[in-house]
Image (spheres, helix red, strand yellow):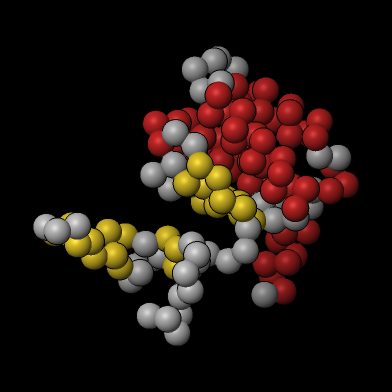
Length: 137
């Protein structure tokens, strides 16, 4: 295990079994399960995760698109953000805002407005730039 992981690494894993004496089996086999690279970790109340994700992933998709960050939200409340440091900060602040204001109406529009105010459009890559980058890979 030490060939692949170090103490302090963050991973996306799946608990496969919980036994007596606090024995937990964790699997890294499966789609999307992996070691996470550099980025920012933040914690929110797990009950707020569905609001952060939004209906059919709409809220988290908007955050990803507008901040040009990779964002993964775990059911346990841990959220990993990777991107340009300024964009990571805006994404984290936005997620914190959603967590605090999850009960309010019109949140999606306010979130979009806050991101656009904090990030000049020149700092956010266009959809065409993202598609060109994907074609080059």
